[in-house]
Length: 173
Image 1: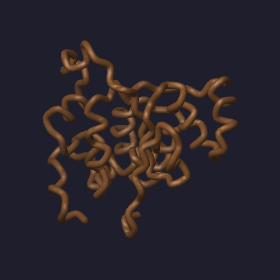
Image 2 (image 1 turned 90 degrees about the vertical axis):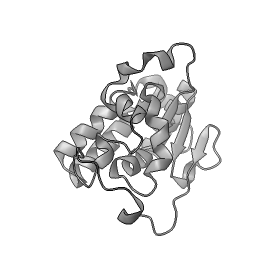
Image 3 (image 1 turned 30 degrees about the vertical axis):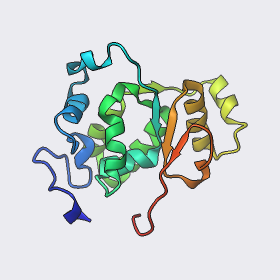
Image 4 (image 1 turned 120 degrees about the vertical axis):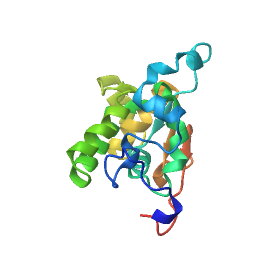
């Protein structure tokens, strides 16, 4: 696996999460992750469709897994990304547990540059009727409310309107 990727950049937080502060797509991605205001002219006249990355996609990206490049381009315009707070929670919990506080803090700083969406009563009621498990129902309801495309690796989303499903390849975690 590691041989198919370039070595971790010299400013990487750890080998467990090199993308937390240094993407493979310099210089545009580096600018969007470290100083989003440096590219205002690109956003002036057109508003891209909002996008939600499911927790599994964020975790693949931050781990710089073989699938990370699938999600990297979506993060070039972080202001078009919508992050349900349940996704922020899931990613924070896993990164703190498996990669440590420093990695988690750096990664979560990127996520917080996106549009964070809190849970409210109407969203909870929308989520209650879509038939998905709790966290996934909140993520999907958030995507529907914001007109966002939901990118996910979770098979139970496959075939739902507004979902781009990335099937996990066998043998890749």
